[in-house]
Each structure stands twice: as structure tokens, then as C-alpha cells.
Image (cartoon, rainbow, N blue to C red):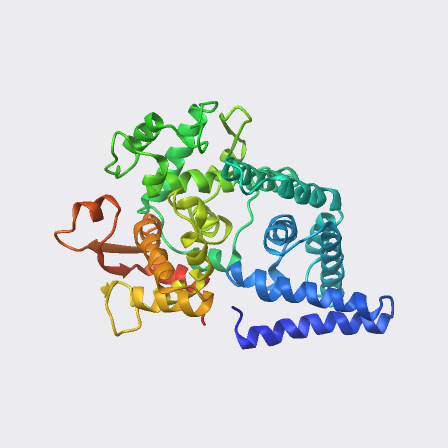
Length: 415
């Protein structure tokens, strides 16, 4: 959620546009009201979920993702008329910014260009609402729809290596050494394997990497996981997250025959600097990729709820002293599980049981992924039950790193 200071600043920008439109007397009061409401939703609901991106930092790719994905999925009964109205709003808003000398001509040109592509957004809308959420193939169809959005963003840019970066996060980590973070090396190894095996047949149920390939990939990792010979992809937080990170970034697609097809975006990604690769991967994990992708297919709801309060969780991590140990289950201190459970119940109005389930996912899936990024480390309780070990439960205490402190501050959201 935006701070009161930032909300006042955003209100000033929106009011500035509305007053400008009233003075020009080119639009009716109703039309100006629609622009105001469109901007309020975009600036006060969507941008805070994108690491609190400022309206002046928005480019054509943010607008493409908002109108072509978020708005279609999140706004109840969204229709083509609303999509068109939003594109008109962005044309007015950013032309006003240019007139006020707040953005450059090239910045405006990119936004105006994407706002003219109404047919593409109408197609996205039609494709989304043709999918049946009750279908057994919903997950695969939705993943393909998301990946198609990433491919659209690639082909609309003359540089195939282009990836939209979170500038705030990018600045926070630009001076950090990344040589010791195995995730970047391991993800590159993963992509190289996919390229060499492009065309491989994926699993029938979920279009995932087959077990035999998972075990081979795991063996090539810097620190291989202890995986069962009968492992399913979702049982490896690392390889499951790699699959969805690569898919969300459009580094591969899935054919109608359920075969993996790599794209030339892999070369573009691998040509980025280590800090830019790190920033892109974390931004994709934190904001761009639905966490529902990461949970056990038999679970439902926990990942969505947890993702909704990720900014609050990041805030709690951001105020931790790097290197100091914190107990995950400490009670009476308003920290760790106790605090996050309270956030889930109070902010999302869910019951205690659902909040507990969300915390289990945080412990078993999100913590290991954050460790892969080098943002924190943790220790398990001694003498854990076998069932707990197999489900990655029982974290006793954790510590954040210097890098983690910088990253969590960049994406944190205060209550």
C-alpha cells in the first residue's frame, strides 16, 4: 500500500490531469471522471503491487502487462470497452506528463505506441474468457496465456534481449557482488539443459519436466537437492521455481503436443549482467509470477493469500538486523509466524486455519527459494519427525543477509 505522502503526490498528479482536461473543455465531466477512476485503480491498487512503482517510472511494458493481464484477470466482469477506456486514460495521462516536462519524448512515444494496439488487448481478453476454470487443463492453458503475454512483449520490441527491470530494486543491488550466489549459475545451467533438450516431451498431467530429466538437472546443480527417484517437479522448490521463472519470462513455451520449445529470449537473458539477471529473476518471482504455480497441485488458496501480503512479510524481513538469529515460531513478540498469521487474518479476513496453511507454504516453499536468492538462511529444529523432514517443515530460526536487507527494503510495504 502506498504511504500517505506518496498518495498525496499521486492525487496531485491525477488532479493535475483532470484540471487540465476541464480547462481545455474537450471532454465531458463523465469522461473525466472515468479517467480519474481508471488512474486511481492503476496508481493505488496495481502499482503498489509492483514494488510500489512510481507513475513517472511506468513504461509501455507496465501498461501492456496491466491492461493485457492484470486488469483482465482482477477486475470483475472486465470488458473490451473498459480496456479501451484505460488505454485512452494512459494516452491522456502521459501526454500531460510530457507537456509538464516530467517525461522525455521517447518515453511518451513508447506509451502511445502500446496504447494504439487495442486489437491485441481485445484478443487477450477473448482468449482469457474462452478458458474454462473448471477444466482439467486450466493450469496449462493459463500458463500458456501468461507466457504468450511475455512473447508479445518481446516481439513488440526491436531488441530481443529486452526485459523490463524494476528500477528501484536494480538500484538497491547494483553494487553488490553476485559471484557467490549459486542461483545465477544454477539457473544458467538449467537454461542450457532446456536448450539442449528443446523438443522434449513434457508430463501429460501438468506439462512439467519429466522425472528422468529432473534428476539429471539436479545432478548438475552447485548443491544438488536430496531428491527421491520418484520425485515430481513440485517437490523440488528450486527446479519447480526455475521452471515457472523461465516460463513467466518467456524463455520457453509449450507446444500443442506438450513439447518444450525454448525461445531466443534465453540468449537475451544470458547476455545481461549478473546484477540485472538477479534483479529480473527476483522481480519475476516476487511480483510477476503467481505463487499458485509453486504449491502442491492438491492445495488451493494458500499461495494466493500469501502472495497478497508479501509486501508486509518483506517489511518484517527488512527490519531484521543482518546476521542476527530470529526464531520463526517465537510467540509474544509480534514477529515471524505470529505476526504473519495476524496479517493474513486481519488484512484478508480469513480464518486462523487458512492462515496456518499459508504459513506452512511460506516455510516449506518460499523460505527455501529466498535462500536460493541469498537473501536469508535458516536452521531446522533438531530431531524433526520424518514427515516434517519430507515436507521441509520445522524451521527453528533464520537470519537475513546484507543483500537480503537491501532487497527486502526495496519491495517492502508498511501497513
